[in-house]
Image (cartoon, rainbow over all chains, first blue to last red; front, top):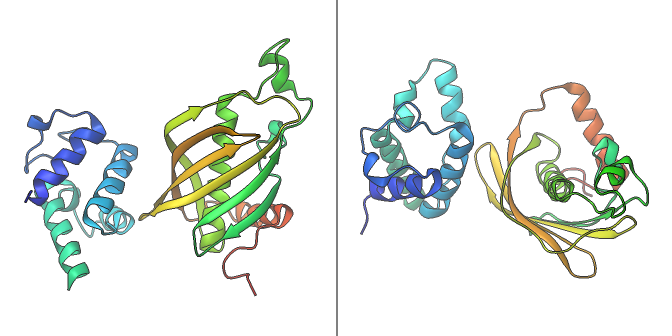
Amino acid sequence: MSSTFDVVADVIAQTSEIPREKITPESHAIDDLGIDSLDFLDIVFALDKKFGIKIPLEQWTQEVNAGKASVEDYFLLKNLCAHIDDLVAKKTA
Amino acid sequence: MRLEYFQMIDRIVDFDAAAGRIHAKAFVPETSPVFEGHFPGYPILPGVLLIETMAQASGFLILGLNGLSRMPFFAGSKKAKFRKFIEPGAELDVYATLTHDGSGFAVTEAKIESDGPVCDAELTLRVMDFPAPELVENMRERVRQIGLTPVGDMV
């Protein structure tokens, strides 16, 4: 069974045409991979479908804009994967 | 259709909130400055306006589903295919189905038919708070004009 990171990295590679080998858990979606907001919508759409969840992108963006969270909290891939795992766990609980 | 005002949808035929689906009519005008340039001697509706027509049907679907609480804005299209030319005076059946209700965005599958398939695409719309109060009022008036009853207004 693929890890959450493998699924996320595959989705990013397919959606953004970023070489899969450049995508690591330490990659920052914006700063390192250069994913823009529209591409990120496509990625979130694919991840929502893959995991059967609704990633609260608006809430995350509001928290970052309000200074309640850092960009890294949500857009560093290892952190994004941890949030996805939490959402999946809440869905199945 | 009022092409110069980008008002593409004329009437809602059916809005099925439970299924997340809408069917609208769009009547292509017989004359328009658009046809003078696209193309001289062979007027056809530009493909971008067919995409816009599908996007507006998708937008009205989302407005219907959210009870005009937030505004959809066209953000992207994928897999758009144009299967036949549309001439002045054509009657279009426009369909959109919500395939994903994301956080701050929605995805639809949309298509247009007119004596057979015309075009289809997967569309993404950002869904945001209304940026201006007059836009809410304008949209409320538009949905009334085209015969859309949003969720919340249904009795």
